Every structure is written in C-alpha cells, then in structure tokens.
Image 1 (tube, rainbow, N blue to C red):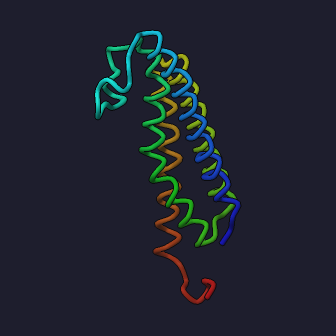
Image 2 (image 1 turned 180 degrees about the vertical axis):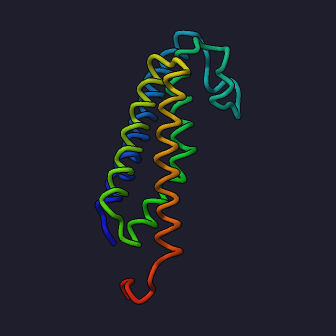
Length: 149
C-alpha cells in the first residue's frame, strides 16, 4: 500500500474537524445572543436554525454538512488507489481535490456567492470523477499476478 495518496484524505479529515469547530464557534455565540435555548426543544436539529439566526451564521454549518457528503466518496476512492498503487497523477489529483474543498469551505463560510462556490464545486467534482475512474481502471485492469500477496 502506498501511503502518499492517503495523506490528502487525512488532511481532509482534519479540515472537516476544523469546520466543525468553526461552525460551533460561530453558532453558539449567535444562539446565545438571539436568546435561543438549545435545551428548550428536545430533538432539535441544526436545520431548525434556518430563519432563526442570520443566514451568515449558518454558512459554516452548511459547509460542514457538505464535507460529510461528497468526500465520503473521496475516502474509499483514495483507499482503493492506495491498495492498487497510485501514480503521481492520482496523488496530485487527490491533493487538488482537497485543496479545492478547503477553498470551497472558506468561500462558503465567509463570502458565499453561489457562482464562485459552484465553480469550485464543479472543479473539485471533476477531480473526484477522474480519481474514481482511475480507481475503476486500476481494479478492472489489474494484473492479479502483479499484486502483492
């Protein structure tokens, strides 16, 4: 197994946790300021805060949710490539995907204009698509005799 391609996945995990703390750091003071008692409504969800606080307060939460969605396809893709033996292009694509997701996070949590956010999403999705296709090719076209025992 080649660990170099796993490093971008590890960085994205750390980034996701950073976004979790960013979300909490923005939301909790805003809830207190708005007089919203988290314990008053059992079973409440983050989505319940839509319309209750300024939209900007929810932007980091929206991004955190996004980091729990599409990257779940990225993680097994890089594990497959790590097992099959990634090339330099695969590693570069993985780092590109992670860099774009981090830029997307910062943009969405601060500026949040949709055209730029959508462009970042499309470019990162394209990188993920190419990685996924390369993972399929690596597994379908693998020579079993060349794989480690």
